[in-house]
Amino acid sequence: GESVGLHLPTLSVQEGDNSIINCAYSNSASDYFIWYKQESGKGPQFIIDIRSNMDKRQGQRVTVLLNKTVKHLSLQIAATQPGDSAVYFCAENIVAAGNKLTFGGGTRVLVKP
Amino acid sequence: ETGVTQTPRHLVMGMTNKKSLKCEQHLGHNAMYWYKQSAKKPLELMFVYSLEERVENNSVPSRFSPECPNSSHLFLHLHTLQPEDSALYLCASSQARDSYNEQFFGPGTRLTVL
Image (cartoon, rainbow over all chains, first blue to last red; front, side, top):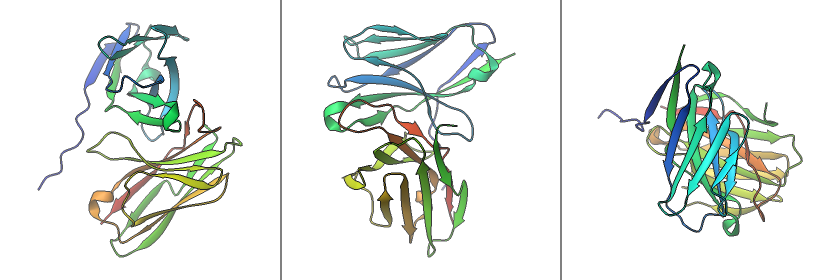
């Protein structure tokens, strides 16, 4: 039979606009939450992380928001650029489990010029 | 460049072949990881090595056999694979695994099993 690929939600964004990527996580015991970016032909690349006792952290053009009440994580990219086109993954880390990462399914971001 | 290299980048093998994937990290890290990224599932952890000792085998079939001869090198030996094993195999490393440490990923080996 025909194999079915993992369906990735896709976010199409106009260049210069802001992007918001969402992630629902499952484990309330997670210590850190991390966003990774994966471009075609490359491995995942660390973008930003947030510790579980924080609700917001800012980096260069990126902001991560954590809402533990509803187990929701988001990544905001300001002034999206063509180089931001990639698949973005959220991951959970439990330190007591040996720095193990559990990844979400990913969101594809397409930046339109 | 992340400091983690993987070879080969692409591999096509038959179900009766034996092949090996190689990973090398140039970061002085003590922990190394194998992940599988397939079209049907999110990225999933396969094996973890800390100071050359295997510390986790995430219910991976025995047709996948890891080897870590030193802290800089990690291999994944493959034999009698199935077509459903076709995937991108990613290696990662981190400074340690007893505290939160960023994991650095290699570019992966795209494996196709015929």
